[in-house]
Image (tube, rainbow, N blue to C red; front, side):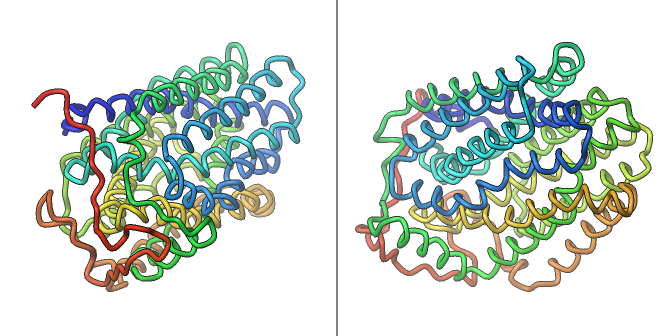
Length: 437
């Protein structure tokens, strides 16, 4: 399970991402209650949350192409610095009492743009640092660090919001991006960038990523399912959860408690994801998604806080197991030269419906009430999963027979990348050697 940590450069990357995860876990809580304290409007909260997602939708394909065309390390460092500046400016506005909704939206747009470039490159960089042999363990360790950091960070965020205000939590997040950038800077260029690169320009590179997804029916089926659940399940929870907590559960501390339980569940999911290798990983990931349904169903009441805490833990476990399996499947079944681009297409497809869901959650809840909307979210989580499991390509995606076998899914076809100067050579990336054996 901890084998990737024997690789020095993966350890450096892991340290930076753990620090960044701590800050990332604080900001959503802080921003949600900052907006509610400014205007008290669920609609305004939806707009601010939407502003973090919109740049990802607009720029993620460009970010994926950049991650395959240029140095992934450089792309990620620049993205970290952009997010540091955006969150730093947000913190100053909140601490000085000069923040307005429009200024928060603009700065969240900048931060979201940084994420659009960082995330696709990160998926490919993990593969370069850990190698195919330790991919699932590496992905699980990253998820474990996020969950463990969140357990501490969410409690700290709830306390900071209640005692001194949201600005301090956002400022801490800004500083963690500097730590992440510094750790990325320590990675040797040869390790971080050594791969076959596409050379046909951004548009040709984007087209190659889209074509790779179209060749794999299981991928676009997965994208559709995740897009619909983001629209109808996840987005309403992100908007209506803090709204219900503010009015019915006691405010930020209650929502932070649910978030801490979510992180604890994610920690358990990371441990499971590191050791469990289902023969049909896509089926397993979909079945785990059913654990998301209890959270919106219980928020609809709302139920007692202890029940919501248990539901939050179940939701956190499903998210981490789902994401570990999904990321590992892409890294195992997609050629390394396409990983950042395919990841960007996956991100675009999964998030394209989220802004619509976030924008509609507040107005729909104003008409029908938060309770009925959240009950509908829970019902759709179950229905969409069962329908997707009826699609045959879902069952044809199988894990490699052993750690050295990365054979593609049965319906895969992978012709050479027309934008790659060495695609036909079939080179595999070299990885940094462990410090000890």
